[in-house]
Length: 403
Image (tube, rainbow, N blue to C red; front, side):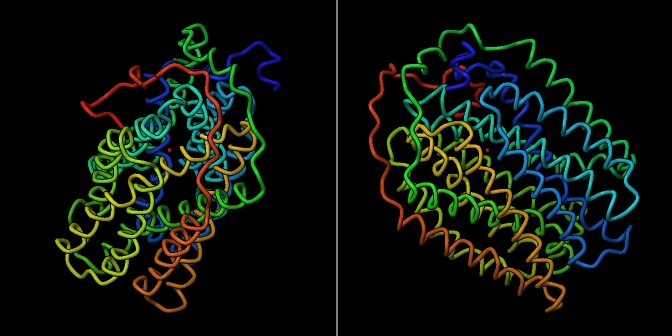
């Protein structure tokens, strides 16, 4: 493999604290557009189908970024942090739909590199309990998703959106430099991974995981990116400037990943994954019918817990097959295509039907399709491992610590 030929361990990259900090920022960046979408739509007079184009541009960029992950994963993280910074800076000075779309495409490329490289890196470092480790690292991604709604609600009344975006962009530079200077190259925990060769995925497995991540990317993103708009139209969005629903959803999704990181030490990934999907299929129609802030909050709590384990469990099942970095990165990047396609489709349906409630059929069908693919996929073939019993103890924790 190219990375090994270069005498670089597969697990080489930022130490765990910097890795988690970068993933926290990535979570903030991924969710950023949803909370500010109503304000941008009003400022630039955008109907829903044009607002959906902003989401489309961003997540197409995420697909490009994730599908071009380098073999040296630490380079992917470093480049991703810088690209996101550049895109956010451009977005801060955007004046309309087209300039904002170009800037958001750059943001997406950077986020795609960060998310794919970090997930693959974590899966390789902690291959004995991959599901628990990926839930742990994705806990910080979810924490960032929670934080961004609260920060926007607190920051924007007294500051401009441009000031917020430029401050946010600067944080990516700090993490990029700090992570580069604090590398885990010589920690010894990664070098044992060289004993496990990568495997080319069978066609059925590659198609199955690609479909699952496409549908999950669309499911999670179409809900989260349109939830603030939904709340302001139908469910008393005055609370926290319309951010209350998205904060509740991501708070419970974050807590769910912390809990799941412990559950996956004793329960199979497939069991947790399928249970969460069954609950999501039931809850999404309930979400579409909510008319008050209280009912929306209750459904968001249950939905966040249901969705929390699906992505980490799915990616853990993928990493258990030990794919090449490029192959895993491309499959993960497909989730960006799902996010782009389904969020835009929601905007189109909402505009045509003049109802965002009706557009909720998009994530509902995605959840049904995802459950069907999960049931169709075979269990991963066991791959002999020479690894010791490695737990993810060096990930910073919040007592339980949980893309």
